Image (tube, rainbow, N blue to C red; front, side):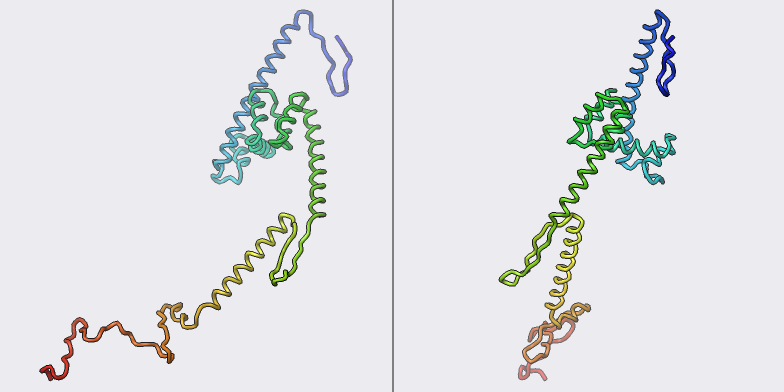
Length: 256
């Protein structure tokens, strides 16, 4: 028996002679069953992603994770992670396939999906195959630090190149030229849209003649005459009788 041990690890017990083959079979069975569990987890994540996208949880629950906590018995943290990983794998087909084939464990995939994108998926998949779950966690932590540093550098670059120039051209037109951050640009576009709509409504109100006020109130406007008096209704033609009234005789035609 080898009594040497590492910190936090139980002493290694050497198997009896002839028992090595049986232990190898047990090890192979554990690895095979673990691969089957990972494949089943991949299928489970596919179902969760579809269930979440179709809103199957929206029957009184605030989220798919809350539904999983109630229906499956997962704690809230694990349920949220399942939903997050399921959504991420929808855009990471290589990682999803590796999990389904049992090539990567769920622990590795869960860590990799925190930083993986369609552009970096292939490199992170290779790192996941080469190292242990702990090694993958270290890689992900370093990757996230690099991402935060790159994001800070990008923010600084955007801040440095932002500018807005407003001036009046020779013909009197106002010219705007600049580069704004997306949030500031969205505010500017909304302000310009609101100003344009206000000017349009003002111009429209000024172009409506005063005589059409009656039409706006429900009446029908009549075009004025040259002397400012509205003409009479000329719908009745001369010499034509209205229904229900006798025609008026002309003088000298034999009638009184």
